[in-house]
Image (cartoon, rainbow, N blue to C red; front, side, top):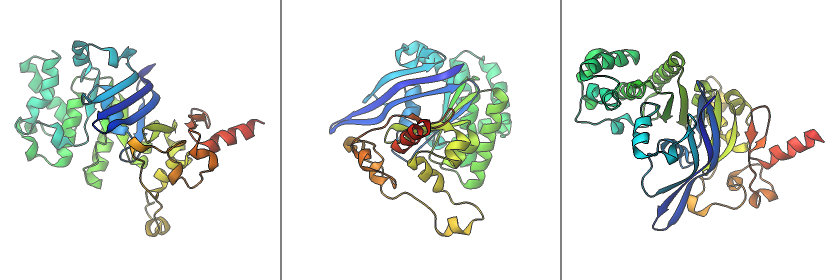
Length: 326
């Protein structure tokens, strides 16, 4: 059973200079109890995709397609139904906990708020539930009396995770949850998320630019470039045997610990992602692609089978498949 289905999801921002296509025709599924990672550089459309799932985008964003959460279209929900879905059926861990928490309210009040809004606890019961949630994320119960500025970055991120778990949702969306943390705290928070997701049987949609983190955390990976999906498949395959040249570049961008070659000569990707208002013709990646051919600048390839449960939007994949079947 799929807990989440995206069907031709597109998001366009309307600004004075014209329309900005941030997400272009994304179709994805996430099965109940599984973890799906979405990777890509800054500007690839990852966070816009995450915000669209619970209709958290600004008013200048036009959203087309379908977002099915538990079989119900989020885009067709009336406000009252959408309010009931947020936190109770799907919750989100934002990128910067400092900006996601109210600086003038104690964290205990903020964790309790979704419980009270959804009538899942009376005020007298909420305190006990807050203490339980803080314990689950490795914080002492007395921290409920603290203000956000009295916590470290890692502790604030743990509070955001506790809030996301409060109403026992079916889906958690984590948008770059460890970007602002140092590597030691990042490892602790990622381990915590992985453990809690497994214990509670929750589905996870995790957004990150770090393909190695997603490969460790998720069952499947989806790689985005210029608002489109360029590769989708099992996480270990996409990370270790990527079929799209952009996915390979992302995987190669991280040095291997203990390997002096990768440390002294790290691989990267030249150039910058394209301007969404001035996308190149054909495959959007072709100006930066090391294996581009003439047809790449004129033909945009859709996702093509690249193995069992694995697809990639690259002309070389399509040619390889055709040659293998002849």
